[in-house]
Image (cartoon, rainbow, N blue to C red; front, side, top):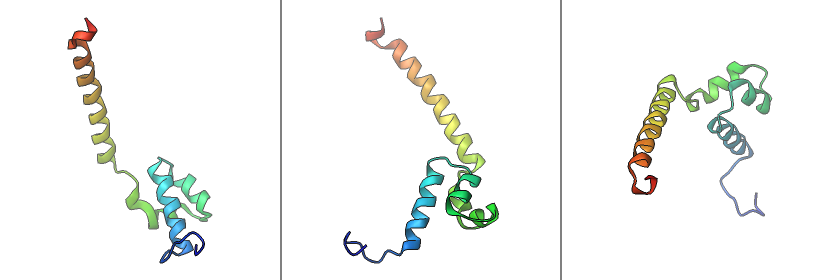
Length: 83
């Protein structure tokens, strides 16, 4: 870490960074658990549960995608280039 010019970072911080990245990329609990070497999924969840999207987050994202696809389709249909 010294050679990389990093200070104030512990090796354990990199472990949290890795786990957070896996979760942000959409990995499920068991995948993250196994990657970290946790014996139980509850260990992983006790530490990282707040990083997984909630049902409300997923619903909001789905609604946003539906609206974007609908509006995008309308804009494409009405554009002069489409005629």
